[in-house]
Amino acid sequence: MTDKKLVVVLGATGAQGGPTTRYILKHLSHTYRVRAVTRDPTKPFAQALSKCGAEVISADYDIPDSIEAALSGAHAIFAITNFWEQNSLDIEVAQAKTINRIASKLPHLEHYILSSLPDGRALAGRQFQNILPYNAKALIRHDLAENYPSLWKKTTEVFVAFYFQNWVKYPMVLGPYKAPDKSFALSMPYPGDTRVPCSDAEDTGMAIGEVLRGGKKFFGRQVVLFGEPIPEEERLKIWADELGIKARFEQVSSEQHAKRLSSYGLPPDTVVASTELVEALPYEESMLTSGRHVQTKEYLPDGYNLATWVDYVRKEDWSPLIGA
Image 1 (cartoon, rainbow, N blue to C red):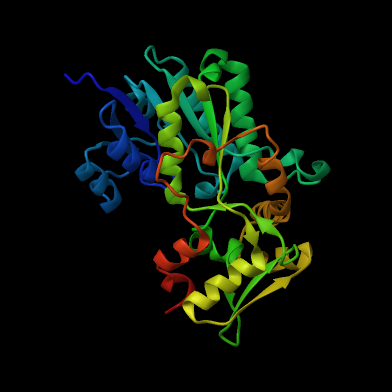
Image 2 (cartoon, rainbow, N blue to C red):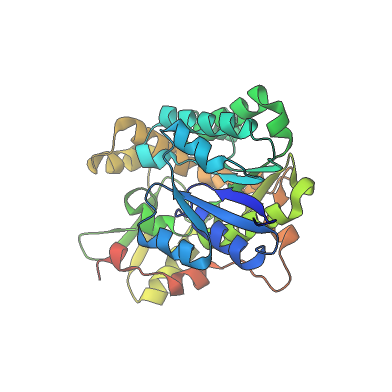
């Protein structure tokens, strides 16, 4: 029987869960063993985590008994839910409430680390009320604080800024698209000199792993991960220059942006949420650097550098986006 503490990583094959699992196994294995939770342990990403030393098990957020089994015996939990998987606020909130409820009953739980987002409704004079992924996280936070105060006291929220990977993962909504002339256009309802806080999803492993290492000093805190913001036009130019392609930034109206998303067949609620999400991006830097949050750069391990946009562009496989 091992004397190592058990950390359970939910969504272990996802953009945050995967790096978190790998970081803990590499840097905190003297203290923690990792139970990596995913729907399908037979998938290559899950098998890779198993080879790294994780206990990989199957669970489904919509099956509470499976989540209860997955969290059993946990000393620490990294919890994450994903609005975009179902395009449903109600489903995401229901799933998170199940996780909160089960976690609150665990007798040995020491630290609850929650992947979260700021409340978009509070941005820019409350002009954005329909950013559903952000609204969902606000409701999840409210459930935790109001219904499980003991769990809330040992919770750390982690805000991860706009992923670099979003251009590849959600190209229709968040990335450049191929124009009829074979060039690319990044079409957004804000000026090209807007600085959008961004991060490499791979750095979430360090951010969350070091929160776990820090323990009590992060209780009740909101930790923010993002690198140096650069203007969107500059980001696009770096990308185009590195790939040897032509690209341009287009500022459009909110209505034009929504119309383009609708042309892809996205549901109306998703179109509204996605449009407000990108409209709100120009306001995120001031909020995330307001001093109310712990910046990841404040606790970087010696020798660790956050990935830059150039670093990411050079390592990413862009063929799904550019069609090469």
